[in-house]
Length: 115
Image (cartoon, rainbow, N blue to C red):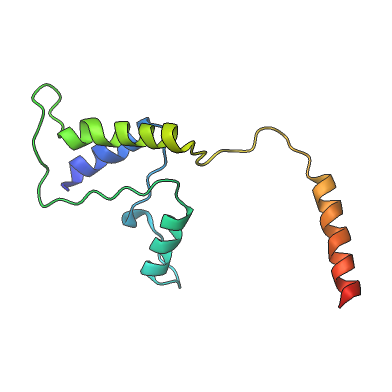
């Protein structure tokens, strides 16, 4: 995909309210790239792979490819609707985890006694 077209695809994903993850966004690190790719795929609600040797047919009014115009927005919205995906959501509900922490500590004590 040409550089400008790739930027447009990323913009379309962001405009749809999703977070794109491409190999160019991966940081350098000790883990192999393949391990990092598998991790990102496994943590994603949706994995969309667009491969092409060329940009494709262009719709005359917008100047965008049909894939860019329809598939990205439509497909992501269909996945969200059909599979009830949650995606990345910030915890703004102010859930109090104090009781969970207490229960966890109690269970850890029981485990240690059983050992």
